[in-house]
Length: 117
Image 1: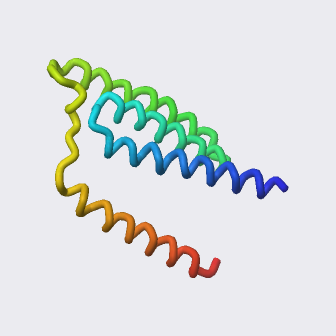
Image 2: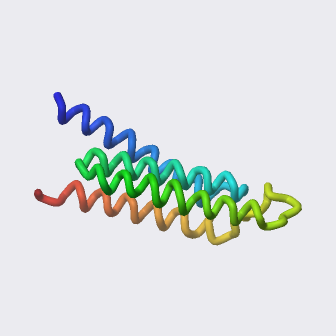
Image 3: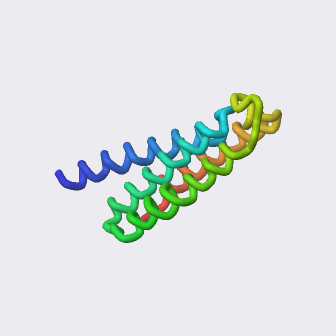
């Protein structure tokens, strides 16, 4: 029963990490991207907690989510932009990169499913 709970927690945390990482690179507002980066780092800290790496999880939250993202947020806010809504434009390469990344993700999943432990 404990394995089922840890599997459900891992699936939930991985969905949070992948979803928030996708939002980091696709949002137009740079401040919102930094905030979703904090969510990504906290989700990774949760994965470290599932691996019983409490110290690494604490360092992840304190250093990356706490210090690095806040420093980036201050840097973004100190830049005098007139229109912050369009501060992180998505260019045309996204349309090329998205299918390639999706195909690689599926390919890695197939290889991981076929791997013998």
